[in-house]
Length: 218
Ligand code: MG
Image (cartoon, rainbow, N blue to C red):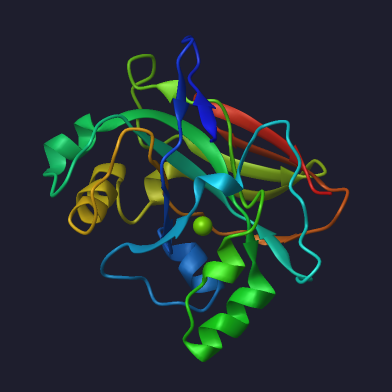
């Protein structure tokens, strides 16, 4: 069972499912040659792939193109289904910065065949999170800077204000398809600048005023 930590709290919450949004920044959709979607594109990762800041990302031997994707992560604090915008907002318990690690070579093959993305997105250590900041401690503004460096080199540098679907809109949509429960995490998509990492690389992901995540690729 994976647990997440909340800053200024002794609570350690078991993680439920991890719902991820694809193509939520127009510039990132464009860099991979994809259309900007009319609805959030969603896929799942199991909690068993989750690691925390300070732990290592293990590069799978069946891929030769693993990409970093820095993302805002939402922590769901209560069970909801078919939530309206207000309930969706109220269901957010906290925020973190996360990494949605992706095997881009595998994903390209799967996309060509029209197959699900599972093998490109789900592998041990493919999701990483920082500690969460409680919504009671920090009211998100929506224009915080989101960035990622590899070995000190700035690779992704954007603002949450460029998200196509806002956090409540994403929750509203997901909850129209499946129940969201306390402890579920939502990865809200990555800005432009995704790229390859190699074994030995050190990744630092950050969202202004929220948190910082540090990991190494092994
Ligand atoms: Mg992603």
